[in-house]
Image (cartoon, rainbow, N blue to C red; front, side, top):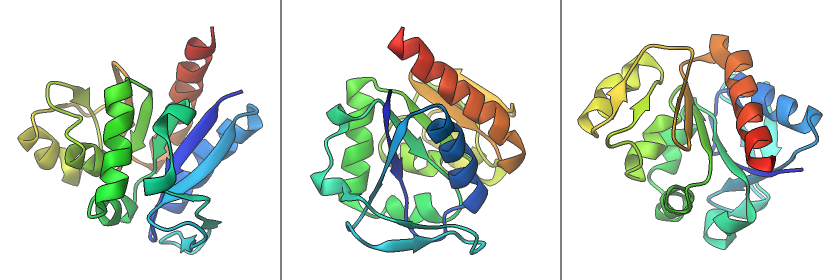
Length: 173
């Protein structure tokens, strides 16, 4: 089964971590939390989820993962200020590996210079930032463009999770 890196910082959107993660685990995939510092405990912005960082981004090898998951909330904005996390995401882009980002997750893709010329979606407040970074922003439940899978909000999580699982199934075939 696949090994999935989940990049997180404090104040992630609880459901945008929990639902895709649960679907991935239920399908037999292994998740590893990647953050700024290993061993740190992180809390979701609603206080429903608490996770521990397994590995610091500077010590993680993108080549050892099959997919990158970027939940939304305030976490991507915190992470975009960490050059090690940005470099980790950028390496995923350079390797052409699947990247799934929901809600505010594409903020981290902007910082990693991964959206120019790509069609993506996000939470509406990120639309102008994505357009300014050269992306074609559309208002759809799920958008797949090359190695990127993006979604708008918690209401889209089942469709987002299905697209992510589909991407892993296609890669395994």
